[in-house]
Amino acid sequence: MFEALTQIGLPLALILIMTGVGMSLRPANFQQVLRQPKAFFVGATAQLLLLPLLAVGVIWLFGLSGELAVGLFILALCPGGTTSNLYSYLAKADVGLSVSLTALVGFVSPFTLPLLAAWAMQYYLGADSALQLPLIKTWLTLLIVGVVPVFVGMLIKARFTAFAERAQPLISRFSVLVLLLLIVSIALDLGDALWHYLLLSGPAALALNILSMAAGYLLGRALLHNEQQSRTICLEVGLQNGTLALLITTGILQSAEMSIAPSVYSLLMFASASLFTWWVLKRKQT
Image (cartoon, rainbow, N blue to C red; front, side, top):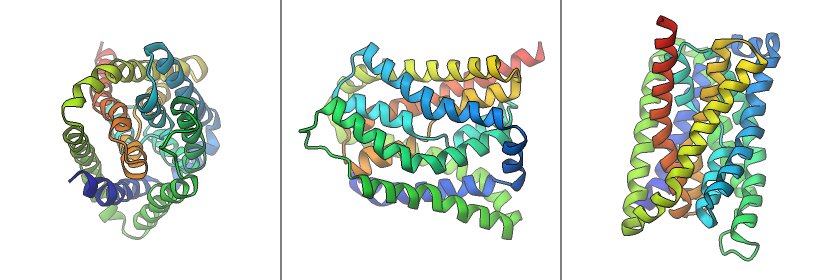
């Protein structure tokens, strides 16, 4: 089950999820980036630079090493996904900015992620480790499952608008189900060792999730002075595409241990995003 999910089901699921991101894009999203470049620049910088730096700090603080450290760092390199777009809508944030960040940072990630992940593996595992990231294969995989489907989704939206509008909510639910199924599969594959790895990586994953959301929100408040955009950056930085991280750790590297931190983080982020949404909506009412 584990091998079938990671080698076949996971890439197909990601293609569908990223097609959903493309179907949520409109020309107005890109026009908004041109009209308000500062908000996009702050969000993209927070995702591409601040989040990996926070991950390095958390890994050091909690003493993670080996595959657990690499797994958490790979997660921090992933862009947001449909989940961040959904929570931006629920939290009454700037949905257009959220979708733009998800898509455009997603276009950059295939080029940055393999290089930085390869560095992390050499740093945390050692140059003589049996696990090596195939850069070309990873780059091509990320393009095929992460970039091409976005353009396909945009084409579907342009040609079959009504269908795209109906399909988007279903794809968001599907992405959550796939992620949960993958996490269960990883847990079964690890067996008795699961609790040991959870105790090691769980606190670090929780700390990274809380720190990234707090840093994103405070950075937005300090630089943009716009509540909606601050909420968006909080959610984009704090909610990562866990399915993409698992594609790399389980599909390409075939390491269940490396998948623990992304799995734990992916579960925690739903709780933290829900609490954040409840907080901002309650604060708005008072």
